[in-house]
Image (cartoon, rainbow, N blue to C red; front, side):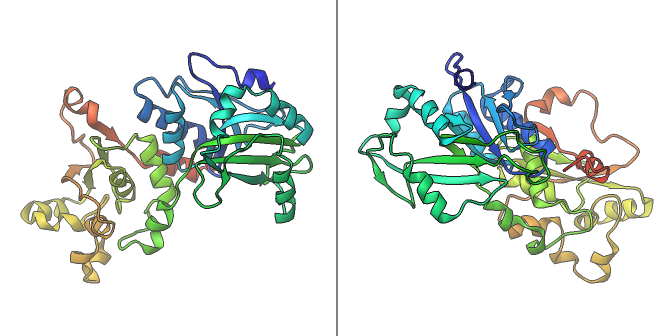
Length: 355
């Protein structure tokens, strides 16, 4: 019901949130975490969700109401790993005729500021579960002559981007249950994902990795859900090769390495020569680093140097059987303290919970 979708409440409105079709269980939680990050305490809990009519919950198309203005929506989309784009929804329908009717009914005061002669624009046709040929896309774009665009067309750097988003109505779509009927959305892009960091930080080009190195997309997702930002202290209690801390440092957070140790002889060695601590990652010594002679140039620090990120503040060597923090520390460090632990996502992955 489009009027209900466009219902406003104290300046807040429903947006169309389009996700990438991956890591389905973490899409909404990431948005809510980023709402908390940019909108302040309580903003994450204030996020509301609903599904478009006839859409399964695993569909990439969700309707979201955010506790803030358009700037919050843009900040979330630009930082997110799983949000493809957030759009001001101008209309939707099962057919293009229904879509036209909905767009015409959308308030002019919301449309006209983006249709002025001084502005530039671009229309993009996208789809899910089907392929639309270039010729079909051109025909679809030509069908929007009823929208009074007065600005210049700019395909490279438009001021405003409008999207036609279409789903099909037959068969399963990428493993999802079939949509009961075709749906076409039209909206103005408020914010879009910037995933250029994934090729930059991909593991295959990283200097120091190991069997437990976290996939870079998952590491950045965890940093987002851990609210990593400038001024936060991110501490990884099972650091491994530091993948999560690299992601947190990219977002400006201070990082702290923790190397838990079970071997008492290694513990004594570390106490005698603290410079060796860089070679002792995770629960025990990585004998390959010492044996192969890669120690000085192949460790967690080399990953931070590779990406020109601030190095961790320090290394905390802790006994695996004793908690490293004294009682009462929460009052001192809680406002800028964020514990990111890889165990939860590792466990969910091992049990097949992550899609």
